[in-house]
Length: 185
Image (tube, rainbow, N blue to C red; front, top):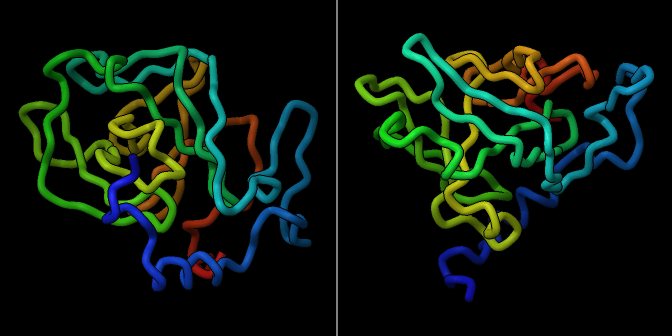
């Protein structure tokens, strides 16, 4: 059953309707993908969730935080993929909830997590998301600029902009939202 508070209000639908790029046609400034690569400009909007069976690990100075081969990628036009890991992939006691929240026009209200003993958010989750993301309630994504995130051993590079959490790997091409002048993307 979907809670009433998770049904997008009219202002949210208006925001969704205002998206400029929807992945239907790659803009002229987009990089062409090479063999084995994806263009973020081919990703749809609204975003989709795609299962990913590669080995994903998150670690920091004190060691491993999470590990799985059962992540999902959220693919959205102009953004590098955001990997979400199931809650059981997190080493027990390694993360704590910290103050702060944000809102995604597709996923809902997010809460933030930090490595235990610290206060800087290193990741976020949606405890009670909109229906489109309901199957992933509580799954956690991490900022690759704040903790070490790897995909099959490749270290993910962070998406520009302090707010975004996309994981840039060699198998995707941009340009990516987050750089100066890209807020309308």
